[in-house]
Image 1 (cartoon, each protein chain N blue to C red):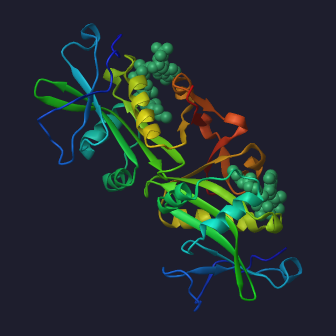
Image 2: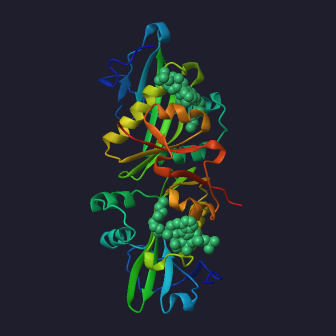
Amino acid sequence: MVWLQKLFTKTDNDNILSDKTDERDWLNLDPQVFGRSKIFFSTNQSIDLYELEELCDSVGWARRPLRKVKKALDHSYLVASAWEVRGAKTSLIGFARATSDHAFNATIWDVVIHPRFQSKGLGKAFMKYVIRKLRKDDISNVTLFADAHVVEFYQRLGFIPDPEGIRGMFYYPE
Amino acid sequence: MVWLQKLFTKTDNDNILSDKTDERDWLNLDPQVFGRSKIFFSTNQSIDLYELEELCDSVGWARRPLRKVKKALDHSYLVASAWEVRGAKTSLIGFARATSDHAFNATIWDVVIHPRFQSKGLGKAFMKYVIRKLRKDDISNVTLFADAHVVEFYQRLGFIPDPEGIRGMFYYPE
Ligand SMILES: CC(C)(COP(=O)(O)OP(=O)(O)OC[C@H]1O[C@@H](n2cnc3c(N)ncnc32)[C@H](O)[C@@H]1OP(=O)(O)O)[C@@H](O)C(=O)NCCC(=O)NCCS
Ligand SMILES: CC(C)(COP(=O)(O)OP(=O)(O)OC[C@H]1O[C@@H](n2cnc3c(N)ncnc32)[C@H](O)[C@@H]1OP(=O)(O)O)[C@@H](O)C(=O)NCCC(=O)NCCS
């Protein structure tokens, strides 16, 4: 897969779909793995909620009311997305977002790479991109709650479970 | 200490320090424990950053740049405070805040009760107040990262560590 040489190169793209300034971080891909697909990451690409729902469906996540998803995205500090460009078609293939107080803490939620693109090193590169964005903003503490089966995935990226005995806890009303 | 009968009664207070609408949730206190002190909780009381710093000092937390603290408070979804009123003096004796996406997830940070008021049931009542506020806003998932020595404190409130193997993780850059 070997393909990370020049990750995060800024390129000027002229075809802007979103009304926001469009920054696309194009990946250097191994054509043997990715064929004619091009892939970029972004933190300001407009996201179609139906496309996001399909992506979440593809990994078996429970459906959530779109109105609430929209609210959550609007109030996330960072909304990161990964896109495949193939000919004229641009498809959402990865997603992650973070809540934050803009100063001390950020918490990453809803990390997903489409099954068709998993196990190719994309998840790792995408998380590195997300972390870079958060650290660039001088946020001291980047945290997340990892499902049991992905603890190792995050450990390889430099996340430590329960550091100094700190425990992640969830409220369950009786 | 027995003092929770009528917690969260709304009262109209005329002396408004803050420019926001001022809601004070007064506690029913046992005078044998609290003497002539009155105590209320609030989520919209203006907080003096120096007073907050003193409170954090009192439990031995590391100092943080006030500019950053202000930013974090401004971008917290919920800022809750506990106050002692004694005669004409109103003092900050408890604090907690939460980040949130306003829809699915909230994460509680910086929970503290002044040592002079600890072990009287205040921390428990204050956390119940914070949880009530978050749940009232229809936030599904209330989370936190608990220091090792307070895991039990949160467990008694209904928080579960590592539910279904979910692990709290922190990023440590090499
Ligand atoms: C978890 C997920 C984002 C990983 O993305 P990916 O593109 O498949 O991961 P990568 O190919 O970049 O793998 C990076 C490294 O982690 C390892 N890894 C990947 N998935 C793993 C897993 N589930 N458990 C343990 N290790 C894993 C890979 O072997 C690889 O190791 P290497 O660096 O030694 O080669 C993706 O599998 C996914 O979307 N899963 C479903 C949704 C989900 O569970 N999200 C997490 C919710 S908390
Ligand atoms: C943790 C803290 C908020 C608790 O507040 P408090 O007012 O002392 O707690 P309470 O008196 O309401 O105690 C509520 C219950 O929790 C228990 N408890 C209190 N502190 C505890 C602790 N550190 N470990 C285990 N149990 C604890 C009490 O025994 C009591 O049990 P009960 O309901 O069976 O009577 C307070 O001690 C504090 O500010 N500590 C320093 C800062 C800190 O560590 N914050 C947490 C960072 S994650």
